[in-house]
Length: 64
Image (cartoon, rainbow, N blue to C red; front, side):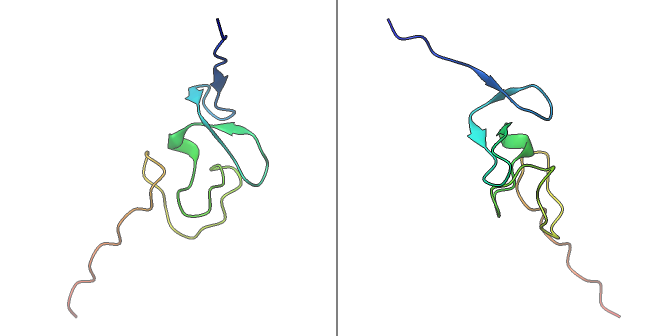
């Protein structure tokens, strides 16, 4: 029988299945930027992230 190892997110401790491409720490989907694949500690994107790690849609500008 093969033992399945569970890794935990280095930021929140949740079960992680991903790894930051920059610092190589384990991270959960909530703390991984889908744009650059870095954890929220390493991400340098100027786009704010939702709790899911996906970029937040920009709100439409109001007419002047």
